[in-house]
Each structure stands twice: as C-alpha cells, then as structure tokens.
Image: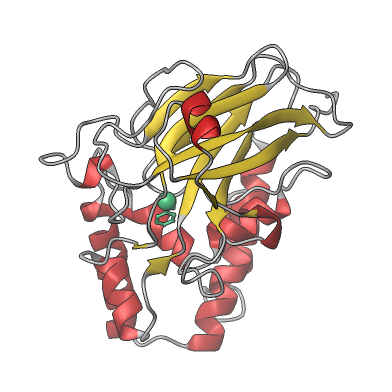
Length: 287
Ligand code: BEZ
Ligand code: FE
C-alpha cells in the first residue's frame, strides 16, 4: 500500500498493531488519527512544520529542575484544565491545574505554623476542614500548600531573595480533619513569559496573568487525591485566567478582620485576613 494522504493514518496505526499494552495502543491510534486530521485540515507548509518542531524543541530546552515549560504549554492551551475537568471526582471539591511550581517538596510544618518566612506583608490565616462527600471529617489528612508572595513570585523563581520553602508547607490535619496555617495574601502574577510559551502568548496578543490563589494537594487513605487552588475573591483576572483554571466554587473571601482577640488566638497581629473553607475528597472507587 502506497503511503499517501488517504492511506497515511491506517499505515501508521497498523504499525502499532503488535503493541502489548492495549491502552498505549489506543492512545497512539487516537493521537495518530487526530494529528493526521490536523495536518490534512491545516495543511502546514514544510517550513511551518519545521517551525513547529523548533518551537517544541525550545519548549523542551527551556525545562530545568525548577522550570517546566511543557506543563506551561499544556496549561495555556487549556489541555491541563480539560484533563482535570474530565477526571473530576463527583461530589468533591472541584479540582484545578497543578501548575509548574510544585517542583520541590513542601517542608513539613505543624498546624498553625506560618508558611511566610519573610514577614513583610499583611498576615493571613487560612483554615478549614478536610471532609468526605458525606460530611465526615477525615482525620490526619495530608494538606500540601504552596503559593507565591505578595509580589507574585514563588520561592523557586527568586532563589537569591526568598528563603527556600517560603510559601510552602506540608500539614497534617488534626483528629477532626481541621487544618490551619498562617501566611500572607498572595498576589495575582504573570506566568513565566521569558520562554517559548511567552512568545506564543505575545504572538497571539494574550495576557499572561493568573488571579491570586493558593495551591493545595490533599490526600487521605481510601480517598482520591485532590489537586486544587483557592482563589482570592476580588482578585484581578478571575475572569480571564491565562490557564483557564478558575471555577466559581473555588473563589473564597479573604475577609479583613481587626478582631484583636481572634488575631491573638491565631498568632497574628490585627488587622489580618482570614480565609475559611472546607476541602472535600471523594472516596476511591473499588477496582
Ligand atoms: C501556577 O498557578 O502556579 C501556574 C499554573 C499554570 C501555569 C503557570 C503557573
Ligand atoms: Fe500558582
């Protein structure tokens, strides 16, 4: 069979016919079908295809131990969010993108500790409970958090000026599933624009900003792990997140409080901000 426009897809799919892993074969066959359909429809010139390969090469070459440009590409194309949404667990807190900044392990911290190692911005208390979908508290659930500072930078982006582990903490909820930590209110920020993904945004006149948020990965034995954020109510860019990750149910009020007693109880100075919300996990399904 000659390789031509009409036989190409079948020829490539046939080449995968001996793949022992059935799921891998299905993924490769579907990828081939859609990739070939794209080429047939868009009809890139040889030069355009070379440019596409050069772009993807640059994406790979921009990756380092602390930078993941491929994740960023998947994010700005809405693919990360589509994968999250299609895998959403019913009844639990909505999930959203992992993002490229969970690259280092969060330092273990005690409940009530601060993740702000600098202490120059308005203090904030974040608290809530980890629950199952029927409202049962999940004792000792693991709550991993990471966020940028009040200027919009993660510690890994400013290794010279931010202490490592700033804005990060690995907490264990108490026996009633409660968690609580001190921090500062994060800022909205631009995703990294000094690489090929930034050039893509510029060429398409898209802004690079994300609304202010705190990241969470929550885990408890017998439950599906949850990767999500809470978004700061009123933040700029809630309606035009560069990575399409906002869900209305994840927007939380970071209320101002000048209650001296509550401040003292939480180990902060008034005035302070307080965000309170529950994180709900779905039970693992039996295999
Ligand atoms: C983040 O929130 O850390 C993030 C997510 C997607 C792209 C860039 C940053
Ligand atoms: Fe982030």
